[in-house]
Image (cartoon, rainbow, N blue to C red):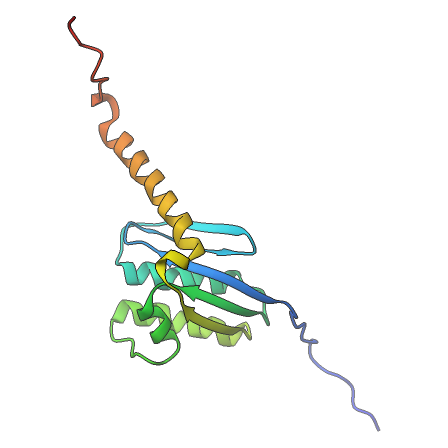
Length: 155
């Protein structure tokens, strides 16, 4: 007697994905994957929190059963995620636990690697976003009080 197959069939994603993550204490973090950039604008936080949140949002967006090589320029995040360092900070531990839970629930295979800052593809994108954000904040701060320095020149 043959048994019936029960439950849902698991779909395996055969393509290995590559992603780069980065975060800034200015509240900008995110990732680059498959030529697409995902930037989150948040409140100011520690750099380590932003780095962990970048990984968290990547894991949220990965399809179930994905395999992904992730690159980060944060040695702390890489070593904590890989189990080489303890996660002592309470705030970081919450994000760490959420990341590990996503990996298990979504059946992800994550290979998190350190990469130098200059080789972090998303790090370069984030630097440009930070420059735009600084300009935007400067413009908001100056607002109506800003005057053209050349408007009152006397000749």
